Amino acid sequence: MSSTPVAVVTGGNKGIGFAIVRALCKQFTGDVYLTARDPGRGQVAVTKLQQEGLNPLFHQLDIEDLQSIRTLQDFLKEKYGGLNVLVNNAGIAFKVADTTPFAIQAEVTMRTNFFATRDVCTELLPLIKPHGRVVNVSSMGSVSALARCSRDLQQKFRSDTITEEELVKLMTKFVEDTKNGVHEKEGWPNTAYGVTKIGVTVLSRIQARMLNKERKADRILLNACCPGWVRTDMAGPNATKSADEGAETPVYLALLAPDADGPHGQFVSEKKVQKW
Image 1: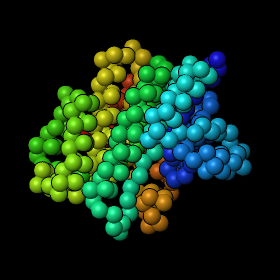
Image 2: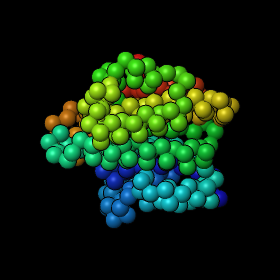
Image 3: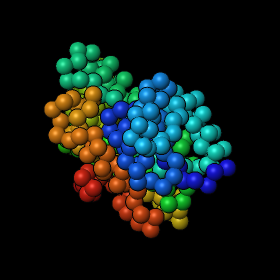
Image 4: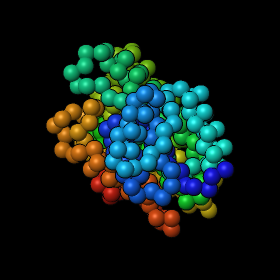
């Protein structure tokens, strides 16, 4: 078993994920795994970074496939005895002009951005070693979506006692409400992406609370963050930041000093804790 520290980035073959891998290869002392659903695309991305003189490793990971997550889990357990840094970056968004019915956009986006990210956390969080770092890439879209929720929903999503089970029920209800055409009446905003990212931010707050309860002495720090508006396939060419600039806050959180006691359970943007 290797005693080398290890970092894993989901959705690492392009965009912000690719830039996070690049930065970690330069700044993290240890092995950095670029993961992607498609091994072909993943290998192309690895080769690109190798041409820059960097040494990322590749492992297949489809976050929507539980078996794929468990294969990675077994690999990390056997080879490294755990995991030091996990960056949950994989996510999707429909284009504004997309004509796919809203209910389907809601279901598909929720499945990837919230439920699949939660599955990765369920399987990989137990592997995080003492002083480990977990970064869930969310979005400022979660803040603006929260502001457009009903007061009742806002209260629930800001609660310091909401459980993962309650959050799952709320995320499921959003998808059901869109199918029944009542999501606005039920107090939801008109953004599927935004609601899925509320889920990611609140999930992060819950996970940090659980770590405090169950593994306080291990000093693991877990946060949600917003990379900013980044020029990627997802956000388009007019966004204000390059992918490397978008990677700055996630990488900052992934590399918090071993003796740091925060931020933890926070929503972070531009390396600063934001009010949720």
